[in-house]
Image 1 (tube, rainbow over the protein chains, first blue to last red):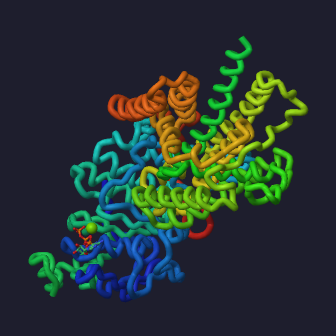
Image 2 (tube, rainbow over the protein chains, first blue to last red):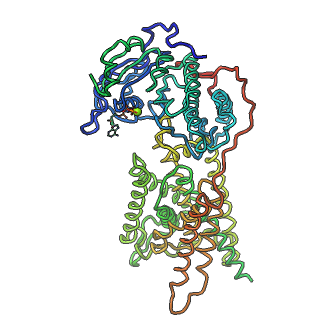
Length: 267
Length: 341
Ligand SMILES: Nc1ncnc2c1ncn2[C@@H]1O[C@H](COP(=O)(O)OP(=O)(O)OP(=O)(O)O)[C@@H](O)[C@H]1O
Ligand SMILES: [Mg+2]
């Protein structure tokens, strides 16, 4: 079912995201300390590294949830370092969270309906005086949301409160919700954490399918088998800086990478 | 008989006013999750500003001081009162909504309200300090007649119309994408921001709209009772509005209506008309406050979502597009197949 990674994507395609010398310390903890890497458009890249190596912090820095103390983040040529999360998202750079964070007291369908960016029905003037302006848009979003729910196998759950979903369903919702925002780059922080192997495969299939539809991915993942299977490119973080980059096969030969993983420390 | 009717009509007026308060707080707290612990301050500002806009200029030689005194007609005063309340909400929001989480936000609103209260209470050049405004002319007595009982019915009709407009606006917002985004921010602000929602802007909108509602209720209050003084809007009054919303059910305007009726009208206002017990003049009001507090505790214990809980969002039933349809994802700047038409 699952296609091999790196299927014929030419390396050296257009760079979509480039991170240079990113730094973020928390007091004495050098969570991210000079990480640098680039992501090509239309690829699936993995961000791997031992626990505490700064993966989530890197995602937060790119997505604007944290301000970098130094460094550059360029998305499609635009410097987005230090922008606010909603501004970053406005560039169609969408992130998910390591722990599922659904809008619990809203239905599954509503969770998806929140996602589309720049909805004209979010403007008070339109709400009060020009509801016709967003009715058609709302209906288009609804159709799209139902189609996405169907693809993710959540259609039957559409009217359930998101807080009542199972852990695995919440992971799927997290991804479905991100898809609804029509992202160009998706930052997924451990989308397969804590779900069973069958569901892991399904999530992997979704990622591949979306990649083929044109979405670029940066995937934080501990499961190296999955990384090998679906990722075109791998970035290894250790102690907050880039230890190595390359394909999984190349990295397996890299002694520093093997050591970082085996010892949980850096080179 | 006419006394009883007048009494019922008076309760009706309070019912309408408390509904408007509760809708306003609902937009802030029920929709957007803003802990506004100084609701009553905005009622007071709305009332005071409308009052001084309607009153004639202050008379030299009297010991009564107040600002403005513009002799304006009521509809304009009403707008001014709403705008003033919204403006104060905006200023407090600038401090409270920046990056503050719910508990700090609650403290900031409470502190701001206390500051406003102390300034108005102690500085008598604004709204005559602790004495407050008195003798604010009731609206259109010449048109509706000066008989207090029939006048109350006219006033009730006007209040009801205004209340229904508020009801309509509040529900319109709730069911719009804006209301949905407010609720998403209430559920998880970080996630909403990760989906491009400017939480500060949206929460500020909820704050200001809510304050304008409450301010409008304040305008109606001073128009009806023709007076307003600091003793009438202590922090405890904020609690009554909160109690109404919690008992009735937050994030549902029917809950706000039920709560206003039970808490604000039945327990808070109706009991004011009970005769005081000789020897213990505060007994009735103390019992009233205990009853309201008890109702809140019972609600939170047995039915935390309130008498009328938030309803599930309903969407029109649409057929799902065939499973063969590829997912619509925008690529590049061209926009996707699924984006709005
Ligand atoms: N807000 C914070 N305050 C202080 N220290 C932090 C904060 N966030 C992260 N850290 C520290 O920074 C380091 C990197 O954390 P981060 O969450 O980025 O690691 P990670 O690679 O995502 O780990 P995991 O694989 O366990 O998810 C850790 O030592 C962590 O304790
Ligand atoms: Mg992490």
